[in-house]
Length: 304
Image: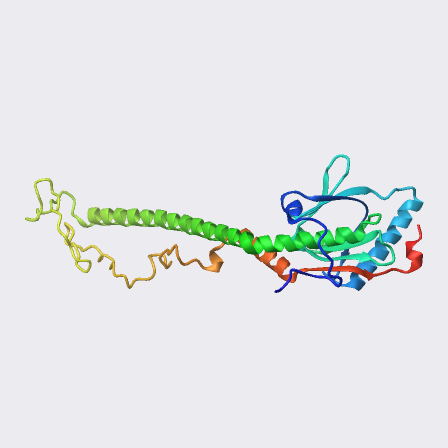
């Protein structure tokens, strides 16, 4: 069976599925910051990011600035970074955007994950300092990703697909209503042109003889006419033949194919829904690499 994540040490999960599905797991940590990285995965990538952010933290500490404390809330919906007192959400990383988690083998407090930013589409590496909990947090993120991936396969993907089909149908209905309005205007325009032509072709003051087929109200009696026949006007001209209603016609007056609610092309879906589904499928397909104790920095980097 394909797994949504990979890790070098097969350890049992830390929490029950219900805790991550219905609630969240909270951890306290210090936030060293985030930095852009070139790749979504890789030990060397996170090693460089941690070294860079640790150096920046030493600079800030020398200037009297403290490392901010944050609260991490991990669930199947993502990893939230909050201000611990006000509960203000500083960052919200959706799980399908997280591609790599790891903790430092030389400093058990340091852990990191790589997440794709929703606005810039850049890969950002988030680095935290959590006393004695780095490995547990890494595994918790891996468990949440696994549960979210299973939920997406069981119901989430189908729900998104259903919404796509509904949105596609709504869009097609709107297009048909627009086409219907244009057809009405076109028919009205043709009728006006026929009236003008009747008036200009008849001499002033002349009265056209009544056709024996007209009734006392100058109305032509109703009669079924074949699609190929034409109806003469009072001045001798003929109306254009009626269009055939054969089922062989595949396109309407504007060249559009008839609407079939059971056949929806992929291109009919709104771009926002299509991109959202593609993003989730791409993120879960990439998977989450959860690697524990795989990278380490030089001992000098761990000095306070």
